[in-house]
Length: 334
Image (cartoon, rainbow, N blue to C red):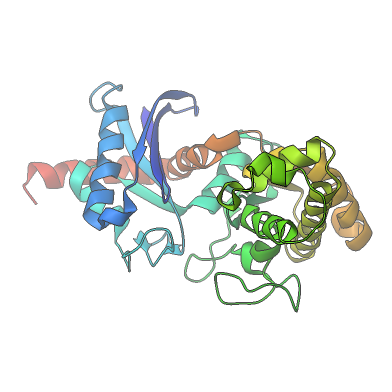
């Protein structure tokens, strides 16, 4: 029995073939080409699925798991209006892919599935209550409660990036003010770095960017900080404090056993994690923070793909039944 997992991003769509234990057997990717419209994206999804399925024995693939940007409803398989997939409004993604490939499809929010992947295969394997936070261009999250994703009434729960962290903070892309994402994401680091470059304060960022503001990003800030640049170190410290505030809220709301952080910002290491943990220790009530590790992901960039595999495994019996139903429908020409 094999499983296909798909990670649908705004710039790239990736697919893997895995066996029933989660071992990855094959992988491929191609550009999403979101600017070309829905039909083009669907074609690209089908293309990567077919490519990895060609590495499996015919008939061995049980089902397909897809992680997509939200908001979406995992129960109905409908993607509402993700900002990085222009023109998508109430797209029945699950049904579209099932109709083209004749296999059961299970759909989930990419951040929720990353949480499920970490819970099933990664740093959260020994825990029942987990929060996963991805900190990259934006901030997303997923909450695992006793082994299950908390979906909410419309499947959109876990949008932790839009908690208000600072009452008079910057305007977020969502239209709110002072969101977690607007203060602690990679995009937020870049904005503060650009503000810094508009001052007279000495910083290696001028040299590293060759005064090309378009090249400034969170990775460059990390590099400058690791070279000892005081201004860059302050930027990362401020980011860690905001992350600490947000995680304190999460601890008090969800009372997890472990917090796992993924995404590019998580790869900075101790420059982020040490002040972050210290801020949580300063703010959180002891009953909520004691013996709760805050750790980077074990699964790197593949965490979402592992989540799509875990999603199918959670629905194993249903997938077997639906695979037979879809095969009958195809044979009957329906």
